[in-house]
Image (cartoon, rainbow, N blue to C red):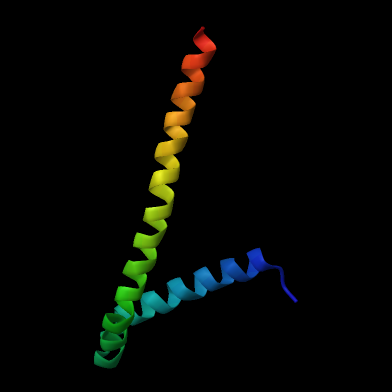
Amino acid sequence: MKKLPVQMVIAVILGTIAGLIVAAVHNPAADRAVSIIAPVGTIWVNAILMTVVPLVVVNVIVAAAGSADQRH
């Protein structure tokens, strides 16, 4: 059985290839499928942003506070 990182890279490559094929074909059925699946991708990206943005902001604040403490 392959390791998880290898499977993830393969999945990303296959997904990219599938997306390029669907974009190039302009098939009405594929366009309908994309319009149905697109909101799921939007929700996924927004969920990641809701997690990552606060973590980055808190990290910047903690780093700034830590550097201010080292000056004294």
